[in-house]
Length: 282
Length: 328
Image (cartoon, rainbow over the protein chains, first blue to last red):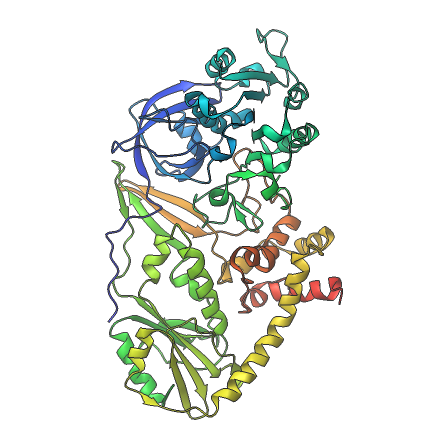
């Protein structure tokens, strides 16, 4: 006789409740949400991982964790208003609850970054996941070599984490440079202007001791990679976070495949030499 | 190896039905066969493969996952306590189920699939029970019991402990004819798979030009039938249905042939053309799954080729690839 199936089970598809501690505006389109798991447990994530945010009635959306696990007691999500779920998130006030599943995905390979000169490069919303690594480096500076943060946005008002950028510029841990594609004449912006690739030739790189981490919108990858190759950095020293339409987060729903890889579980962090030969990866 | 006559087969199924929700092939008005509850219609032991894919019993088209109440509490969907027995599956369908079992079990396990699949029983039906009594190739053991149809009854072999226990009371036999059936079966399998495997090698070597995928894509009418009938297609999207009591979250079969399948919130779409989506459908089965899981994930069940209104099911496309791009 077969045994019967138990309905008392846990499920990888069940969201956990989180309480919203703080909400702050990053730009007119982006907000930062500080959250805590309702049951008091910690998220236990690693820099580079993501969660599936769940709002009943609006299903789920994958959002990268924007804070380091070394910042105890909470985690943060930087969210652009891009659809119905993220639009609903932008209406939430502190004290509200949302669901999350995760953390999911392969994180930044921190062991491979230790003791090396790091180039941490982000474009647009890519600064949100990269911030989890930057904060980690800030909290454990003794583990890493010199760190260059390079950030590009479309315009001064699109720059994310402006307070952090200022803090990183002043920090002894980092050299931080940012640029915008377009600077309107009436802005008070005092940073660089032009595409992010313009920042790379100025860097002093010893390729044997350097790793680059690149997170940005898909069109940014090829020119940035070309510029890093021009500086002598090989593909096995360039780490990427790839954006895909992740619906389940656990390699089952099929929406994020890159040939034989599942971006949600094999990534989203990849070494360039793992994906550069795969069609559609970049 | 056991041997049984029709009365003994009925006795076996009656016994199985005491512990399982037993589904068996039955004839529909249109002449096709479908798995339906034992006892609700006439058991049809030969003919075309069953119409719908067997994996749908464990990963259904609309698969309720959980309910979220208004306070955020989560209650998982319940499943019938009595496990399922599927009877009458052929070699290809059992291979498809085995492939999906492995895919869903890969960590983290897909518990929504596992809870329906666990303790289930699979009984294969092969031998001379195809259309007009043609030979159906023997299974590769991906079932609990295999019944092999002969002119004078069925040979029965068990591949699991549960299968052995169910067959214990039947008469042992030293099957003289099995060797012949096995060699005919292997010959048939090799013939059937030759074109698919050759096409797979061509796709794996990236010898198929983009123009070909564009041409096949131009013939696709985006009905998604190929995906919906394919037993190894498992892609799904998630939908919520909300009423006053809360929200029911379900997963629903999705199709990689739809423009929105991979489109991201930013608007970036890695599969932004019919050519790319057509390549994905074929490449995934013939190359990507070989790289990841070690086997082609098409087992030639034939459903997509029967379903496709424009003749671009996987076997038709594979034949076209071999014809046009084979270097042999």
